[in-house]
Length: 181
Image 1: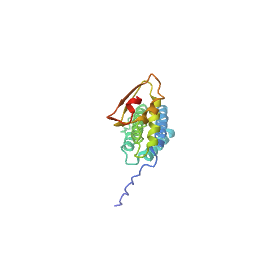
Image 2 (image 1 turned 90 degrees about the vertical axis):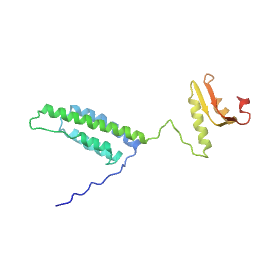
Image 3 (image 1 turned 180 degrees about the vertical axis):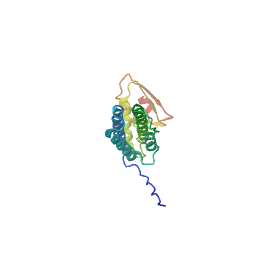
């Protein structure tokens, strides 16, 4: 009896930021195949390309890749009409597109949240630039929570519109912070 060779598990090779637009484009293309014959070469090419893109984005051991493969499965009877076969193929296509949309959401989890910024210790200038950006974006109000504030905060706030309400929550005010306020 011949032994079957175990399929090797492939790691992701495509970064999330690059994979997402590719998969979104494939979803848009896949939605066009509901009008295509169930055995059309274009539909089969889309399936092969999309499966390869999913594997490149998430790795071959991903549940989304498994879901995509499972969506292609169906049960057939010799008595099925062409219309029934087409409906089943379209149902499978819905499942495949759902699996790709799920993969896109999973990939988005890997991207950094643009609303959060991590600044390591010793990056005072970077912190100043980020705070200045946030202050310039304030339209109605701004709340600053800092354990220790000093007079270096005022230059950041002086460019705010006069209609912007400023709230500062602190435990200690250094120097003449309160006097300048």
